[in-house]
Amino acid sequence: MSTFMAKAGEVERKWYVIDASGKTLGRLAVQVADLLRGKNKPTFTPHVDCGDYVVVVNAEKMVLTGKKLEQKYYYHHTGYIGHMKSVRYDNLMANRPEMALELAVKGMIPANTIGRKAMTRLHVYKGAEHKHQAQQPIVLE
Image (cartoon, rainbow, N blue to C red):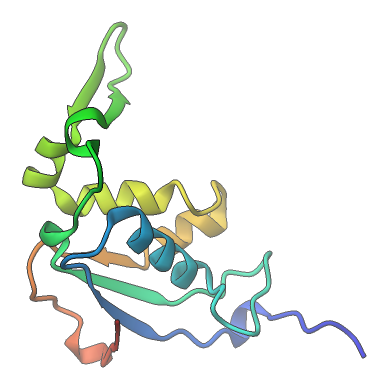
């Protein structure tokens, strides 16, 4: 018996909705990253993009444990000499909580073409409404 290998044209994608209210940022990011890669499927193949679409709502109600709000920083460089910017996570969670989740998920998926394609299937919304009702997403707990 040979090992099953999924083909790119045969992948069946589903839509999932996850409510982030009250959930920890890192644990939610792991769940989202697994869905984006397709690791929850029995037909998972590492070299084929077999992940699903994920919609996350209520990103503003995510929580960070411990002192991460005061001690954790997001750093990025503008490209100019000496222009390293830093944003503390209490400001990031107050202003752009969807970016905090996207950064966490981005660090958990591979840094190649499969990972970049998977990130395009992630949709994060600050509030409870989203515009993907037509896809009839499955609600995950």
